[in-house]
Image 1 (spheres, rainbow, N blue to C red):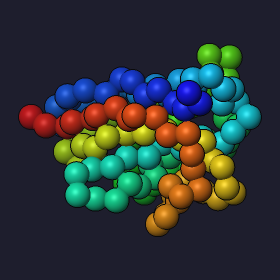
Image 2: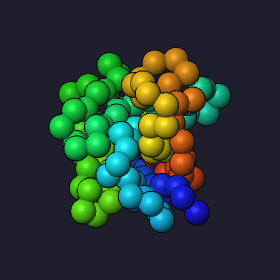
Image 3: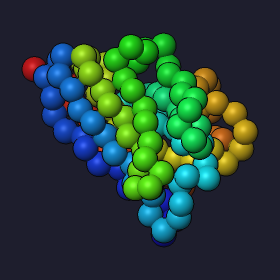
Image 4: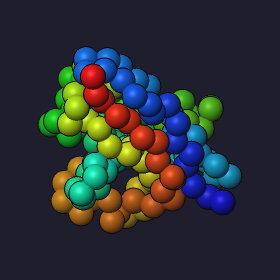
Length: 127
């Protein structure tokens, strides 16, 4: 199935770090801009960060700027999200997806422009 497989989530204390991975399954993600999204219980899915095909351009939601870093390794067909200084409000299921319609991964309704969603990986920040 053409989709991403996310991994690396878990339970971490406030202030801790995690590195999420997003591996493309049965397709080459190098041809696409990729976004990381998250969805907390009872909330809409929101864009967290997105990266261009080459990895040369990245964008971040204001809530994660300075704490999260997106990167990609097109040889390994994988996109990463390095998360530091984690807060309880970062608790959510994290997903990645490719840009299928032009537009940023940030802002209301941005997820409608993305596709090939994986199952997500749970990140829980709690003491």
